[in-house]
Image 1 (cartoon, rainbow, N blue to C red):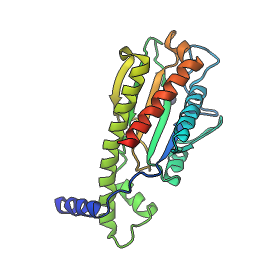
Image 2: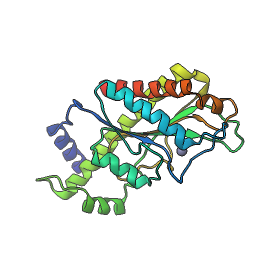
Image 3: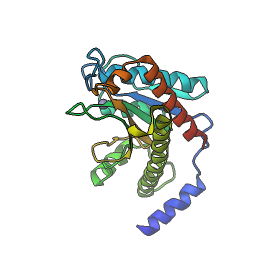
Image 4: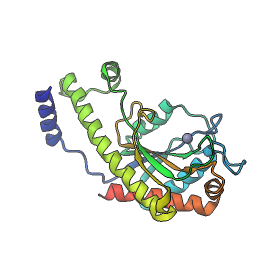
Length: 238
Ligand SMILES: [Zn+2]
């Protein structure tokens, strides 16, 4: 296995990743359609509306700076996780950023956090699936191609961690340090299929009596959109 990894590393350096001259960012407004997500402290506001409002503004800001953006949805529609990642795969996205809002059973929690989306589905079955579905790299032994895929997934995880840290920093600048719940990674936040760096940002607790009302305000939504756009731009520039 060590030999395979060394070989993979050699191949990676022989084919360095393309410079991100024309980065493509896929923004994923969480929930939608019949899946409303968490209900807000302001009862007319559900998570699906907040995520779309923020994502739309992030998209506009990034496009102003020449970054190509695709949204997994631009209206109130139901999407499966698979459909969301398919958008990212089709767009050949360099980054996938899913936007959500939190809720807590006691409505007492507040703050923002960012998840590094994991690819823990990488096991023997997943490999077999990928071997069928992934376009084979020309001239490469299929086994080596699979190792390369895993090397790329490892690199994507590092990139996602960098973006997640930038998102937390950028939101902290605007929303204050007391709400910083940090960068997280857990087995529930799995991104299926996609190999690009992927994060999920929970912008705040929509059901908290104070924070939830703030999240319903256009000024807060604009603040969060600016923070997310800035973090993405910083990440792409570095
Ligand atoms: Zn959500």
